[in-house]
Amino acid sequence: MGGGRDKRKKAKERKGEVVGGKGDAKTEKKTARNEEKKERRAQKRLEGDEDDIDALLAQFAVSDKAQGEVKIEADCAPPSARVSASFIPYVAPKVNEIIMFGGEVTELESGKVRVYNDLYRYNTDKGRWTRVTSPKSPAPRSAHQAAIVKTAMYVFGGEFTSPNQERFHHFKELWRLDLGSWEWDSLPLKGGPTARSGHRMVAHKGRIILFGGYYDTGREMKYYNDLWELDVSELKWKSLGPLPNAQSGATWPSPRSGFQLALHGDTLFVYGGYSKTRDDEDPELEHGKAMDDMWALDLTKYTWERVKKAGMAPGARSSFSLAVHKGRAFLFGGASDNEAKGGLDLSSEFHNDLYTFNLDKRRWYAAELRPPAKAKGADGKGGEGAEAAGGEGASSSMAAAEAAAAGDAKAPAAPSPQVAALLAAGQDKNSAIYRAAVKIQAQFRGYVVRKAYKLYRLGGVVSEILYSPAAYGLDMSAKNMPRPKARLGAQVCVVGNTLWLFGGTIEIGDKEITLDDMWSLDLQKLDGWDMVKENTVGDDVFKAGAESSSDYETDSGDDE
Image (cartoon, rainbow, N blue to C red; front, side, top):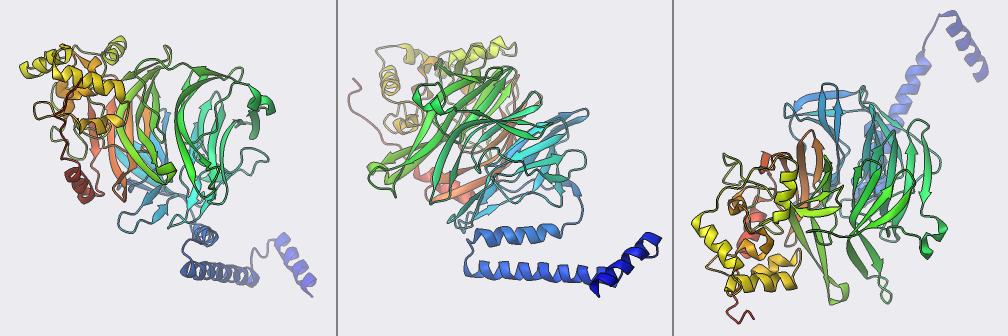
């Protein structure tokens, strides 16, 4: 009987007599009821265990199906606080935008993690946000990667974290977003990289290069150093190594996540990163390692070369931000982890310093920011002054030469008598300030400098000359210029000649604060950070942290 009804229906459809019937309506109702049942089952599972990742993702899938069409909300409110979102430039005729997707936030009061899959566009010319909501979009994720080729954005990997960070799910899906229609497509390709997050991707001559990352479910942990190429025209992944003999002497970077890539012509630079290993005696104990090595990949031969460290390089750190502009890579922030008691205690030092790496000379410089003719936001609201943790402090004179070489530098203004006296004392080998500076420089690097501040008070103030004696001759008034707070995981990119920075996260005591501020920096003038949007999260925590760290210890002992 069922077959007969189908035949009659098909016959009527061929004659154009019917395009649907009561059966269609019943099917739609039945489908809707089934979806409601799925949602109720997922909700019940979550009531018993809010860290049930399968239930969380199932609940998302149900709500996503309810989204009927693409919705565009122009001139919307800025995105909420987040970290580990993709944040990439999209430049086309009459288009200068940043596209931000996903990310996560740790809620300040509850400490629970919320993962996003929202999509925003930021018009850098008009300073306006647009939110795009599309059906059939990727599940919420963070620590994924995105790259744009022509008029499509490709997203791979990432992780979904349960609210209490009890469970983790890593993705191995490849998604494509049409930047004209703003519709998503899932691309179920065979082969390709395994599920991961913390990897990095870059577009190069119509293909996408992927390196590294990690996979950590709590029960199983892996760090990767594999290299992949995605041909976007053929939609095929190709493995580029490491080959089996890479473990026996071939030159290849070690497995890592949290590093950054810098593309320069046909050379791809890899810098820094982080990896963890389990303790040999106690499998429950993990040891982390931040890296400060740099590698160069020849994209015509796929051969690696280790780059010798030269200049004033940042210390070992991970989850820093990096963007390329006209032959220079700009590195901001990140964190350095310090283990104690055999790995039982872990503390992190967060940075907000700014470095440049000359991609031709392969040399590091501490970036010098010169005050503009008219001070920008002298009160520094929402940012930090020179005494901030990991701040750039006084920069090296080599950085001034680097900026001047770009044709944009202006000669620094003559220092005030007070600053001139300070600089003179810093050059006098018989002075206490000189001996203190040399002692600190000889024993401390990178993040530990902030701790060294506690040991020396010179004339009632901590001198920035302790950070870099090579800074003699620079305009010290730059120390009071506003700048972003120290943080890790800030989203950054370059559009035109401007570096844009959004959000990130920082730990103050036992509180983790996810930020929602936004900053810009003119990379030609380097005349200081502009605060586009003030941070609105964790003011009380920041104030309490500043008060607890404001009392410096003094050292009245011999400096020799």
